Image 1 (cartoon, rainbow, N blue to C red):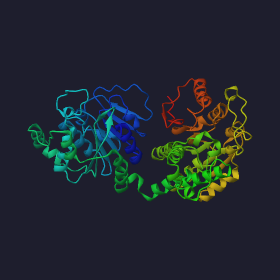
Image 2 (tube, rainbow, N blue to C red):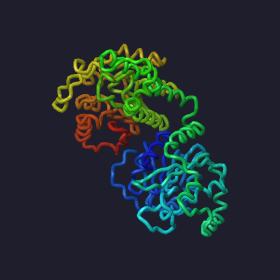
Image 3 (cartoon, one colour):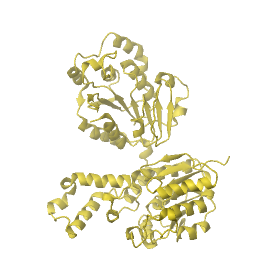
Image 4 (cartoon, one colour):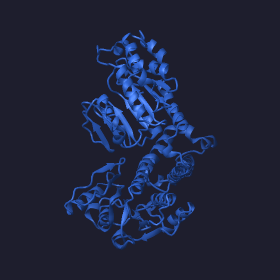
Length: 510
């Protein structure tokens, strides 16, 4: 398994809120983090676009951690860190000591280059194209001095070269054993301790596991060491709401209904054994179905496969909505919250759940939609896109259905206000003086422009603006660009959420 694929599996299981990487160079591994991240490298060469808030420190890791304000720079404890710096054991050890000091007990630290495929690559001086150095010696050092740590090593490759990664958990930020013993350890490194003569010797010393064991190992770690940010009853409740809105809980039953529909249509032949275990019968198709839901994509690019979720936004945009609500709560940004284009209401249902859970029910949840599908746009920019009720009935969800969905969660309360009609006719008179969060999901140029024109000036400075269709529908992006160009303003610096959505914080007026 390529080491980037291994890191993807780790990120998917940990779902870090903050990520730190030592030795980010071109940024390929740094970009895997779907969260704010911090990279440390004396000579970074990142040329590609970064899709999450990223801070780069152009210095050695030793110099960075010599600062007195590391905790202030971090702002929070990293849930996941990756060490890919100098390829010498003592450097990697210092990086581990420093990262553990500023991490949390639930955090994971991953170390690269611990299982070289050729003993020549493990020399302390580079003598070949591939070079891991003697980082592998870190593992027996940690096992000797810190038996309390949970350490596992797995196969991983880069191109055709074996390199291996180590996953280290059960951290103890207050433990000073390694720091106190560092001079002794460094001297023992110089005298050749913890070395192996062959790659087989390294594998035996480190107890390298196959790559297939990585994902279940990390999943078990996360279950045993959950982040406190995700374990309180309030957060468990909100996580359950998200799972329900996205129908992640009953996704296999949804796939089963798709199979039955295809049997009725003559596209598949009904088989009782297949019906009972569709995941086993269609593993690749189910994986694609699951991935489409996670990414907020149409399965097999068909509106008829929209299924039974109450939102099309997928996991990443749902998490972004949660993050934006956290932002306005923690920063005490005044105003109501609104979604323009709600489909089955899932986004607004989550906003209502969040506000209720945090006792913020004086704020209104504004649910703006025609409740009869998308309009036939009058703008030439939308001429190649017809999603009206006649063409896309799956998108025409009635107000009664949305209200029923709210009611199923017990959230159809007095602070939920429905705004029914086309945006051009209703949003200018929307019953709100100020907005803390504005979420746009209108697809079209016209709908996006109508919503921004009516509502953007009501968004409080520091408030969140989310545009769902920015990359999926070019006309939507053009509306955003034209709106700000007409005001003589630059588009605020935005975060790319996933394949389609962006969000940004409304800046203070200069």
